[in-house]
Amino acid sequence: MFCSLIMGLFRRIIPLICLALLSYASACSNGACKLHDSCSSNGDCEPGLYCFNCQLEFSGSRCVRSTVSNPFEIVNNSLPFNKYAFLTTHNSFAIDGEPSHTGVPRVTFDNQEDTVTQQLNNGVRALMLDTYDFKGDVWLCHSTGGKCYDFTAFEPALDTMMEIEAFLSANPSEIVTLILEDYVQAPNGLTKVFNESGLLQYWFPVSKMPQNGEDWPLVSDMVANNERLLVFTSIRSKQETEGIAYQWNFMVENQYGDDGMEAGKCFNRAESSLLNDTTKSLVLVNYFPTIPVKLTSCLQNSMGLVDMLNTCYIASGHRWANFVAVNYYKRSDGGGAFQATDMLNGRLLCGCQDVHNCSQ
Ligand SMILES: *[C@@H]1O[C@H](CO)[C@@H](O)[C@H](O)[C@H]1NC(C)=O
Ligand SMILES: *[C@@H]1O[C@H](CO)[C@@H](O)[C@H](O)[C@H]1NC(C)=O
Ligand SMILES: *[C@@H]1O[C@H](CO)[C@@H](O)[C@H](O)[C@H]1NC(C)=O
Image 1 (cartoon, rainbow, N blue to C red):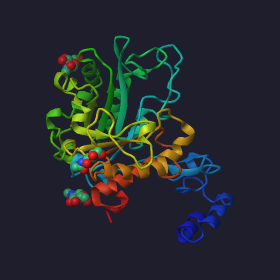
Image 2: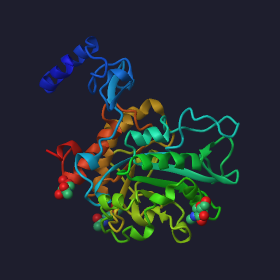
Image 3: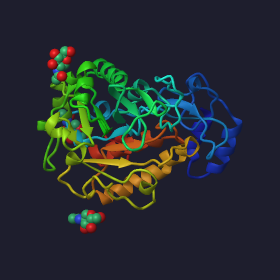
Image 4: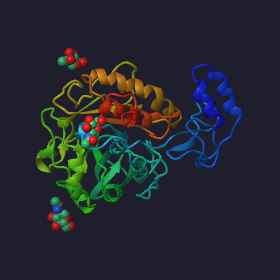
């Protein structure tokens, strides 16, 4: 407490002295520690923060953000859907510690550490899921060549869809977007899972999605109509056959992986139109390395991310991202992907640096 007061007063004048103080005084605990304060357990930190060690940047643990600020609550939900930004988890299903569901130990990367339910409860509103035909069903899986194996499979898609259904049911004002890297060839394979999980009742129909760069429907109308699930597939033909929106008819997206992390550069991935094609009303920015690394992700989710969002704003024809996709979304040196999302919502909703400034 004492130290954060000092920090507030003298941030510009004597930051180094304060840093030194920080490492000695551990004057907070029991939920009283603020952003950047030293801590020894999650319970030390204020709500919305948790205790984390971004060891490449500081020694010991500090309170850092763990939740997104809800723009529908801080501002309102009466604007078009494309006027808001949503924190997006890359490979949301590839969760560290997820037990094997095939009986075969998994040998593949993970990209997240929380369950999908935890991600949603912390304010993640878009999930990137890789869907495959597997064992006569649809599974979430990692692979190459579109084939899922026992040792790369995470879980049946139905289990995850049921978590999403439970969240939408318990949170009647929230909207969730699914972005599918889709390898399912079984006819109506996905539709069956959406139906069985109860998610079809929240379906936002393709017919209501803007085709030519118009604004999306108002969030308040989407909520009133209970059309609160947006699903995009990477298979073009499914828009015709199953009524699942082909992602790049509606969204531009930058390059993913290492090639998308080069400072000062933001360009479209091959499947997407140019980022400045404003006939697509939504903008998705990926910012994660090709091979997920926990150690460095707290740095990437912090400064580098905000810089890239600024670069992509210019490249997208002066449009701020609606979706910002990261690995290990909770890892940061303080504000991380949460602060970046607050920044985007501030820009989108009121031209401010932070959504919290919109209501003032
Ligand atoms: C919602 O917030 C926006 C942005 O601040 C504002 O322009 C709009 O008038 C608000 N709408 C309502 C119904 O309060
Ligand atoms: C959904 O499932 C129900 C019964 O389980 C079935 O009657 C219905 O036809 C299914 N709808 C779709 C669109 O698959
Ligand atoms: C759109 O972006 C492309 C590629 O970056 C660029 O060559 C083109 O001039 C831009 N178009 C407009 C209208 O800004």
